[in-house]
Image (cartoon, rainbow over all chains, first blue to last red; front, side, top):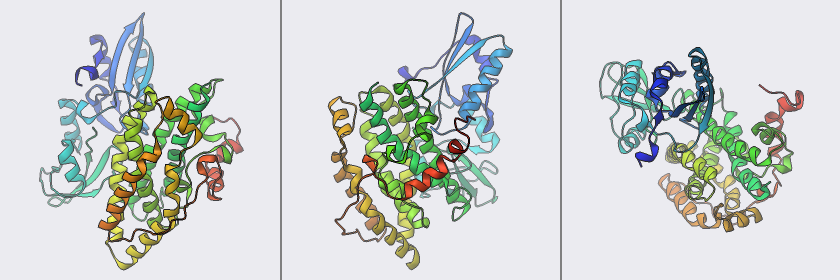
Length: 167
Length: 250
């Protein structure tokens, strides 16, 4: 499974692509997000394949435009292809990406089983990104965007987003 | 053009388009902020899935057809969604009952569609399953909360379930297009989903302390383009911009 889902990104392009951020979570580069599956240079033309996080995610069009912009600035023409398979999973968010999420105030996704318990409100498993308390509660399974759920901390009383596990 | 495949894609995707449009009506009108956002997020997922299907359909059709043409430039009888998804929102109980009765079917259907020999349909199914699992969890949860809630919520959700029950059997009607697609290893045999569907639905209704409707009279017609009057009103909203400014693009 892991091998067929491997990314293929030209070393020269990683640095450029790292300048493109998810418009909804501006601390997370698209590389850390794991949405770039393939990026190669062919005859001075950069070909990039990106995979959607959620089917209806309006950020994908913006990400495509942003890639074209940074590529143009780096002197490349580019072609963006949106691919469906293999389907994106939150497992592809890098360690750096998870850290960035937490610092930005979005709790990083738990493993699938724990995620289910947390989203059914059965167990307290999501840590408050503000004060670090585990005494938190689910407010809504759907948050400000399709990929997030809304939580509230019972100790510091701050609301915060939780990035849902998608597998 | 692969006419049967094109028709088959519409049979799948029109459900998502019309239900997505229905849910979109709740934008700014949900009973509270959280459910408002949840319903519109589900709507967004469904529209996203619809786009993937329609992009594929448009490619099959050729002649510079776009996904927007497929979505907006058809007559009422050319839409082949099931009657269930076009039913009005009425109140929150109806929104949830409709969503639940569709979600259970949708997830079972996609689980089979991912085995399709058509790689695009299979890829869309794999992607959508992840999203629809959340939808089903959301609507099942609300069925239980309303059913096992106050006397009023119990009564309202029971009424909604009773009213919408008549549209459930159509989900399992096999059209000629279905049959042709099954032979090619592309389509799903919906008749085989019926037993698991009612089992899952009945389990949740019982847990929600609700009665399972006994009515054996079922409505049909959506898959043949024969709709309830409600679809016309949805299309009036959906196609407004295209009728006002023909061929407009964003």
